[in-house]
Length: 221
Image (tube, rainbow, N blue to C red):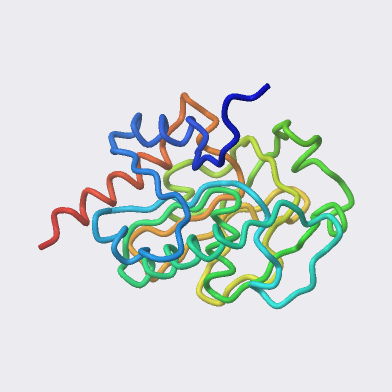
């Protein structure tokens, strides 16, 4: 018999540890109906984390049979946070779903089931198991300066960018052509990656770059 049956507002510990290891102070923002503006007043940077599929209604499409786990409350909250953070030029790092939220917030769309497009399930070989993909990064981009020209990453996604938002620039690709990384060049620091950098405890370069950019925001009057 269960002693408690209730809902929780949770986040994987790996995100918390990655931000802390990079020198930042992690603050969790569970989805609520309003308050994105007030929440960002207290922050110098934003991480949009991985998670459930974005509701395709948010980008004008019908739901695919494989699209699951929709969280309308989280969609509303994170789209508001993303839009407001970018408007303020706060540093933003999107991870997996977070990259997809960035793309949708800026007017792009998603491929709802990637195996339909690329003919394999390498990006999510099994539910609950990370896949391994090599990502090629465009030379001369901010992300390539941080991570180099090519790297092996851990990923777990069955959705990806379809129509890229006009303001975003693709800067990383998997061998099958899937967009694995984007930058928003009109902002001081706005990156999205389709993989899970928080799962690599020995490499927090992306989070360190975010924290460094956030520290610069705090210095500004």
